[in-house]
Length: 117
Image (cartoon, rainbow, N blue to C red; front, top):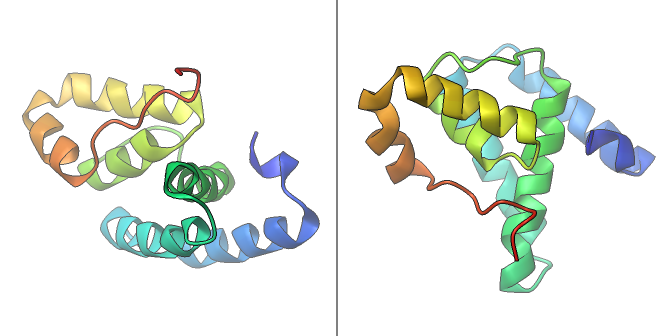
């Protein structure tokens, strides 16, 4: 888990943010989390900015109890995650809901595989 590799201060921030999101529906979680991820990339070069934001999203998602994707908003976030299990869950959901593929793609195209060059 990415969360476990964070320093204690970052873990505390991620835990606080995840606790706030738990009470929200996925549509609101998606908006709040993508907005919160932007500042993480501002300190980095453009090619690293997306990865930094994805890392924040990944760590927060790892602290939420939801492991299976149940709607398009959640699919967008899970596709952004660097965690292969999250991404696989998003793809399973989209395989069963192909009518939502274009919507999810328009919100956030599939993130490049972290293992690709």
